[in-house]
Length: 369
Image 1: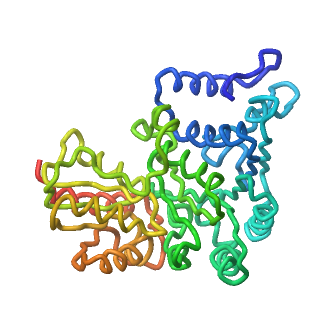
Image 2: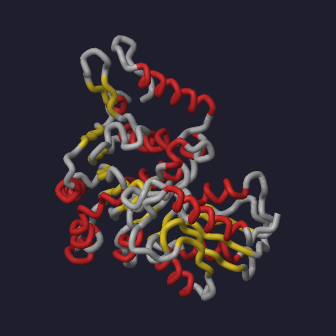
Image 3: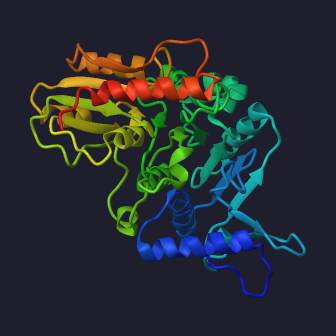
C-alpha cells in the first residue's frame, strides 16, 4: 500500500511520502496515517468493504491520508489500497459536495445497506458536523431506540485547540455526549495510532452495530511522540482508557484527560516526571468506562481527582464526566480548563496561547518533581 508502480510517473512529493511511510515500517514507528490506513487495509484484506466520503477525504484535510494519488503527466488516479491482493474487498473513497446534511444522510443509509463493511463520513473540520445536526438528533442517536434499527456509521471529526480560531477548533463533543444514553453510540478521542486502528476494526468485528463518533486529531497527525509499533497494532485491542504506566501506586493526584491535551501537558512537564501524579487518558468517553476508570483511580487509594480539558467549561466532556464521577463517589472532582464561553475558542492566537498555558500551568502547580 506504500509502493508506487514503477511504470507510472508520480509527483516528487508523493514519492517522498511513500518512501517515508516505508521507512516508518523499518523504524517500527507508525504515525497516525499509517495506523488509520492499516485498519482499512486489514479490513479490506479480510473481505470487508470500506467506504469513506467527505469534503477532502481523498487527500485528507491535513494532507495526511493520500488514499488517492495521481500521476504527474495524465492525472490518472490510483487508489493504492485497492491493490493489496486478488481477493480483497474494495475501498470506495469520494470527495463530496459541501452539504454535510445530504452526504452524511446518504452515508447513514449506506451503512444500513452494507452492515459487513466500514462506512465513514469525515468532516473537513469537526465543527462542520453542525450542518448535519438533524441527522445526529433524529437518526444517529435515536434510531435504534425508536425503530430497533442498528447502524454502524462512523464519523471522523477533526478536533483540537491549536489557536486556529473559533471556527476550526471544536467538533462539539458536548453535543454528542448529551445525545448519549446507555449504549446508543460510541464517542472516542484516541491518542495513539494503535488505538485508532483498533477502534475502527472493532466497528466491523463486533457482532452488533453502533454509531461511532471519533474526535480525530490535527496536531497528532505528525507528532513525533504519537506513534505506535507494529506489535501495538497486531496484538491487543482498543483501550477504553490508557493508564499512566510510569506512575507508582499511591499518587496524590490523578489527572484525567482526553485527546491531544495529554501531549500538551507532557510538553509542560518537559523531561521531568511528577512523583505524586498519575495522568490517565480517557480514550472512550461514551459509553463511560466506569470499571476501567474505577480501577485506575482506585489503585492510588483516595487521591485528588482532576479533569483537564482544553475546551471551555460549558463544552467538551466536563459536564458528562463530572456527573459520571459523582455517581462513582468522586464528588470533589476539580475542573481545570477554560472558563465558560459562548464561542468554542478565541479568535486570537495570542489569547489562545495565554489561556492554554494557564490551564496547563494549573496542573503543573500540583505536581511534585
